[in-house]
Image 1 (tube, one colour):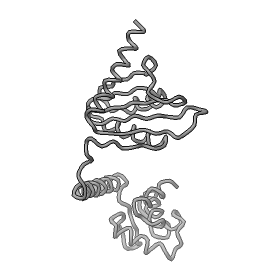
Image 2: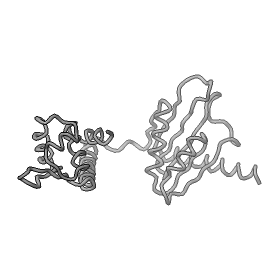
Image 3: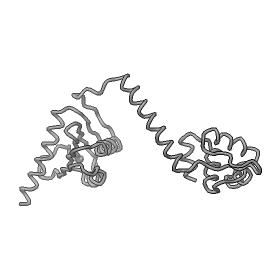
Image 4: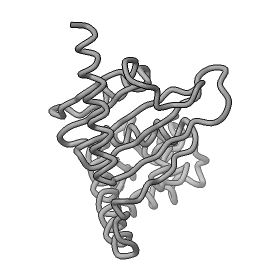
Length: 225
């Protein structure tokens, strides 16, 4: 059951996850019925339910007979989300104290198709105002669908400009919010080597990439006029 796997990822043991999902299905039940529903050995069900109670995920609702009821799934998810957000905020503070933000002039190398695509998605999802992108139509189509609502999108192709990728490669350009940019070179079918690229916050490079994409769009409009 996928819910059990996800609950284990959030820190529950397998028995705890199975007992909690069984309680959600049953509403309230005696331990023996929970054990049958969850497929947990009878000798283990009492300690499992007590651990769930200790986590605040279940509560005793009767003594004769003894019954347990679950915390609602909605409340559990809300509580888990708050806890996760608090941990991320604490991690952000701790990491910020360990090291300053990357130097804006730095240029970081990307190696491999997955690294380029992952960073491109991160840049798009974190865009707040404007995005520029060109090249690699399949990737650009996907990123266009991911662009947050309200973000201004400028998209072009590179067909009418000089190649910026080596033979056997396909270029992809992306910039967001006048703050960050990347260039990726994908290997075409039959090509040799590995996809590679760069990522930077250097304002000069970001501006150049934005300008190049705008030039590509202008050149396209002239050829189709």
